[in-house]
Image (cartoon, rainbow, N blue to C red; front, side, top):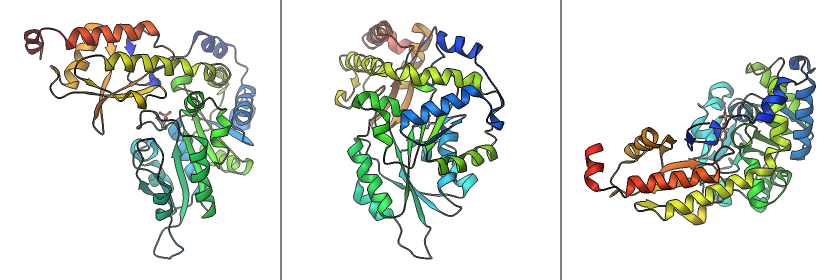
Length: 358
Ligand SMILES: Cc1ncc(COP(=O)(O)O)c(C=O)c1O
């Protein structure tokens, strides 16, 4: 990758080892269940996540949608965070294709929910109301600086949900980042959940694909739903081969991305016009604020970084911050130094030059 691309970890490319494994992967027709590489991926993923079975799906969005539709019937309700990916960025798929009614609650600063708020939103048995069927939890919590949620919160939320007959789904697009940050096996973070979806792309660098895991019965339902969504793939072992490397190798190095994110955040904190909460940097996602009296708007700074330094960072409004940066395999320590130097050069250049360029 030539540009220093901090817009997201979704921009990560497959590693050379992945490309090699893809070229020589044994394949079969996965709709017949005959692709040995997909089968190996599903078995390894289920074991790593401590679940009975797993299913390879096209994307994180398909993993979440398949899970929600496997748990809920039309007219059922799911409780989920107002700032969750499922609610904000998945095109309303659960409502569009499953008739599932979203009931949103606040996501706290540390990425958790207030248990009393979950409780207050579970409906009583009343024919005027939808049936509350599902609680969705996101880990890491993307829009809380990628906050990793600890097992004690997940257990407490899941116990509450289960006591009231709800099922629990974890959107673990970056579950392995949470596991790396908390130094726990990923299975500890999903042991109380009925289903989990995990992305093999993003920080794990596979070009395509996610895993959904749960009980054998849940995966049997998910399998049928995946097919109905057009997600039955044929010789998918070509991409599953990269997924196996993602699980086996890439999960072990995510702490490096977290260290890179911290170095980046500390470098930014030392620059003028930047406001950043260093205590919130726990995984690979950073939000910061370019202050109102800065010589550039977020859009102009982003444009100058791109054209003059080949650095990609996108303005992103979230609460009082206006930039989001995400580190990944292709962002190395020397890139952090280049980014900080470029930002310093722009933010401390003589005022007349900045005004002339705006
Ligand atoms: C928290 C979270 N969940 C789900 C997804 C969806 O993944 P995909 O882009 O593979 O559909 C994303 C994507 O960025 C995400 O950040």
